[in-house]
Image 1 (cartoon, one colour):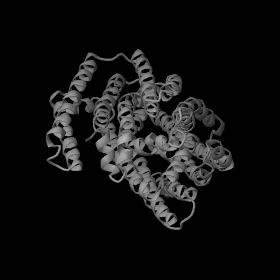
Image 2 (image 1 turned 180 degrees about the vertical axis):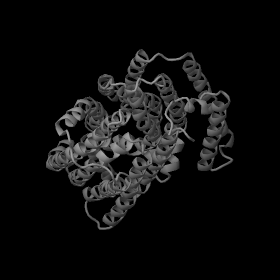
Image 3 (image 1 turned 60 degrees about the vertical axis):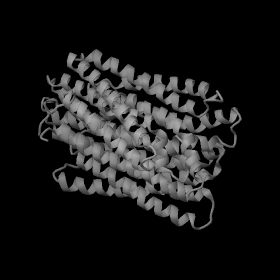
Image 4 (image 1 turned 90 degrees about the vertical axis):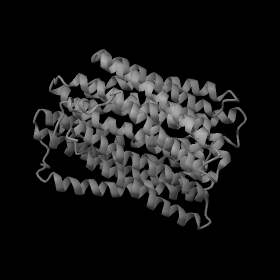
Length: 512
């Protein structure tokens, strides 16, 4: 595959799927060694960590990637080096700030949530946030120079460190007969171990492949201004969804208690945070790969005023639909079976949480479109649009969650419905402005309709096979066979319908 975009998308997609698959499987032994209370403490601390590291893990890499791609497009090597050097200094300061905030306010937050034992998880995640920040500058640089194999491997090493070392700590601590708060902290320790390992890898790869990198900064003030000009809207936008996770972890729990589900509130919330979100994240890994691959390509074409831009935009949006629809429909159609597959010892919880997972599965479709169009808008210097659109979606989420969770027959499902509505609104607005800037082609519309038809055929085939084999094969084997049939049917439909072809990638105008 000679095309750089296709190669990068493939590499990051495979690595991303592997990372998320490992993460989802990781939750299975965690659920065995951790009590329901420990799982609740673990789940409540992470949203606060996620919102504070969003600049490190998402925003800064995107900003550095964009500025680096622009420097490459204009053949400005000095600017390319300055961007990395300045961002490294800024992230050292930011890492210290996030660490102090998480550790310093751990007691206040955990007490306010009503679970003071979760403070130990905040301590561990505070230290982890420092090392995540150190790694952010390198990842953005790798993305901007389109060395995405280095970007992906650093992510994989982080996840492996998180899983194996974190799980080892849980097994060790859980055998000491100490409080659930310490067991939850042991679970979060994986984030710290993974961040350190990944940071070390990024430093070593940069020294190996960029030996001629100049460490002297020629324009600290100018580059800093450029970084913050782009960073502020991107960071605000990236912070909205982690903020909504905090809302889910506080308002949702409080709202459930308001309707009389006092004792069950934390467990019901774990249906989203612990049992459903890791599965959704597996699917989202592919869209993250699409986002990371699109941004430098769109930026370069926009900077150079390339004629390839329109085709790149159309293909990026089409890929988000081609990838998002089957994943969303698959999770929607087999939510209960997926949870029973992963958590065979927790049948009651799997059955109860299935409705939450099915609703969140449908949200994947709109999330994929939102992610792709966000990269496109950022690439054409429309930084503020995705922020505004996601904010509008967030308002919709908060209002709908408050109303729906308050209906006793809906309760926790209301939080899942609100997420679906948030992404539907944000994706629709993004799509409108992308195609206001770059008009869609008739071919794109035709291929979009063919994709919808292929997905209908796929899900009907999968459900039909599962029904026929039900009782003849064990449920787990039946699920795997049905998924395999769905993949084959969908692949055949996409191939013979010529929805995505080799020619589409060859015409991107982005070759090695």
